[in-house]
Length: 99
Image (tube, rainbow, N blue to C red; front, side, top):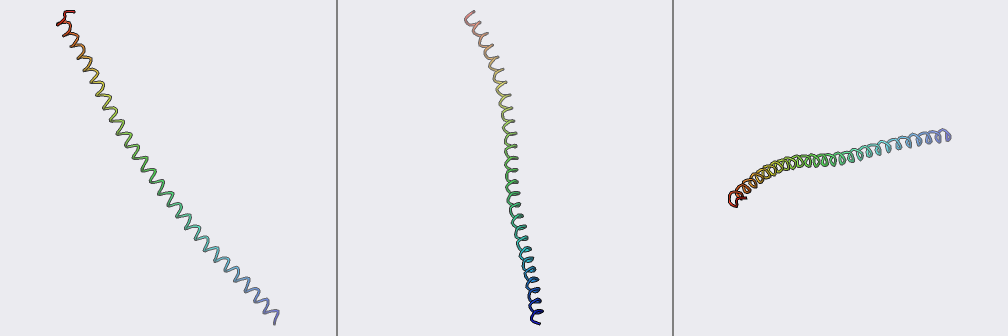
């Protein structure tokens, strides 16, 4: 009887040990999954923020490019006007000074 009791206690101890080990494994696995999900969410949020920043920069670049094109057109018109004004000044100089 003493031998059977010892065997039963040994088997029960082993079963409880395996059960507690399995429960600890499940608890830690869930904790790891939660931590991984939280890290993924932080990374995703940061990537979204970077993406928004890049999109804003792209829009700003388009606006700046448009402004530069408009300025280039204005400079071209001013140069043409200046060329015409110099031609008229030369013609007036010839009339006034007779060169």
